[in-house]
Amino acid sequence: MTSDEMSDKLRDAFPAAIIDQSRFRDESTLRIQASALRDVCLHARDTLGFNYLVDLSSVDHFGDEPRYEVVYELYSMKDCVHLRLKISVSEDDCTVATVSDIWPTADWHEREVYDMMGIQFSNHPDLRRILMWDGYPYHPLRKDFPLQGKQSDMPGVAFTEPAPLAGGPFVTVPTDGTTQVREPRARHAGDLVPPEKFLAEP
Amino acid sequence: MSTTLSPVAYDAKIEGNVIFTQVDTAINWMRSNSLWPMPMGLACCAIELMAASSARFDISRFGAEVMRFSPRQADVMIVAGTVTYKMALAVKRIWDQMPEPKWCIAMGACASSGGMYRSYAVLQGIDHLIPVDVYISGCPPRPEALLDGLMRLQKKIMGEHSLIDQKKELLESI
Image (cartoon, rainbow over all chains, first blue to last red):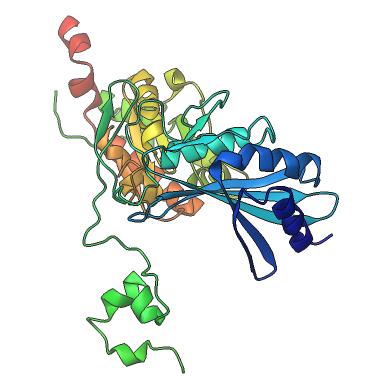
């Protein structure tokens, strides 16, 4: 069975919960209502055989509403089929139902999403930070968090200070342009050497 | 007592088996050739640190092969790797547990300056927390570079006024 057929089966089982069904480069994605997440996941595991949660991640669409997106990558070991589920999470109600009882591996993934993005997971058995320490006041992977970090202090536990960026941040610009345009070092070098020297061959 | 240091004076024809030297020089000579490291291995630099102690590079040629995982038995802390803020105070605590006299080698770009990690999670150099005697460049440094840093530290120790500066109470009691 292909991922398209799996996607269709899931859509037919929950016609009201599916917002969008898409396919890109042989990968099937279903955008579903956040309220139906657990029902869809239980059905996917028990009836369709998606017995493995490959990954659980989150996206910050800063400036859009709803702001966040949580992405579930499912895999069926039996049929060797991959399926992606996406739900939208608004900034006001930043809470998602946990799937850690459906796939136990989601436990730490959800902790990481909570730590880095600040999305809460209801009924999670142990929702603590996993990378930063308990008591760190920020969620560093949010788009409005500066790359150099912010100051924080927990006496006796840890502290942070903003890192010097020296004219940075040295991040790649998301564009279709040449390396000269995309890469920070090449942009910087453009002031010193003739740019055509670095331009890629057409 | 003179505060200028001279190398060990030894003339076999006159002195036979007797060596005349200064206490400082003797103490420094003993200290610098038995530096027991506290291997603070935090990232990939620790792999090079391990290579430096294995047969090809053999850090024991310099008397520093006794890696002590207890800070109380260590003389020099080799901070090898990226010091995250989560680990920073633990490193400081281990440093505080080391008995004087103690020295610190910041091995590699990360331990020296934060390296390529200009980020919210990484301390921008261990010298923000503990005094560093020798910085070793490299990402990671080759074992030869670590040995060079160790030899520079030995040279630095040989120039210290160990008795006058570090054993004041002992001198006063004499």
